[in-house]
Length: 510
Ligand code: SF4
Image 1 (cartoon, rainbow, N blue to C red):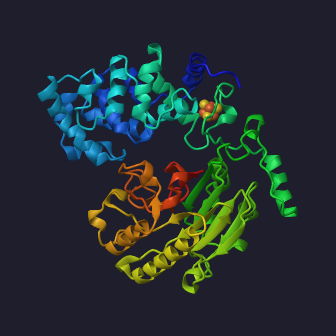
Image 2: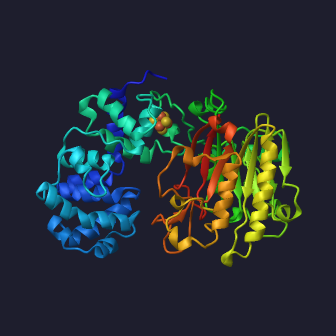
């Protein structure tokens, strides 16, 4: 690897991203040179895909080409125009209040400094920096999640939050890069250095990048993939994935012993297979992948699912065809496998599968749904308590990681509409109280160790365009026993992974 040189890397990237899609806010700045439109587009773009922002901004600017036009629209009308951007109701409220605040505090001018901009409704530090840099071409460093992530991958900063990254870059980054760094790295982060499985195999700066904490995408050549599948069928020896020269260096677990785990309710493994499951699994590149609601017996599955190169799969299907069922793919052979929790009712439904490794147990669980009218609440609580007792017994021996679809949103922050769902399955008081009891009994919700933000969901109804509008629930978890919390290095949600009404959740465990 060549020594990392920021000027050289940014020189290469400026040419590279010239061929990528331009981030929407930059595009609007180039097209209009209008701070009002840049500000509004930036507010709309948060947690929203660029193409959705572009369509919503076009509709809104047709009726509100300037501040006076925006002042003439009701909040309801703005909401209708910007739908379906993420959090469109909140954003409609911010935009409806914007003309009033600008009139009373800023003489109808868009401020060109970060601090005053953050006093506007819906404008945080990131948005303010972006507006200052893009609309006014003044020195400001906008630190999007891509900038924070990639700067840490390069080792240019060692920071934990975007704000820390912004402050570190203010000290360190030469001023000539301040205006362009965000759009360059957002484009590069969306196109190549993706948050999940970056394309290191085709990255133009691969020779400079130390790839700190990165698990790159695996590249399987088709012919070799077929040979690997064949070899798995003919012998019980696990096939190693074949990778390019760079990727070979990353075949082993990371040097600090970090393992990556993923849990995903696939809502039917046969269905998700048709949506590219094998490719998704390769991209996730996890050491252990726990699936719930597989809805199939192994004999009903194609060989491409049963024998995935690099993994051994363990199955615990429901005895009733087409229901529930869990499966775990593992790169490392476990010491032992525990099918079920030695309880007929639960094991008949294929709900718990545990792999034992030298220093931890990995429990994959699919919790029952309490069902409309809460008719299965009594059964669900029985399952929950039996599982808790099982996990506590294992935790006396070594670390326990327990993951899966818990079928409950724990707190109000964990779903979009808590009030409307107070008595509904998944948010009923009994289910939430059990979650309190579970955490009180010595387990930790790892996602909330790192993230206290609302709007972080793992399940969305298929109806009402709920996923695009981020109207969802966080009901999938990675938990560990309290004593092992220090081994948790990161926990996340992967909403960009499609294929089910749930998205995967992840855990980095040392
Ligand atoms: S080599 Fe990989 S990690 Fe490094 S910048 Fe390129 S895509 Fe990102």
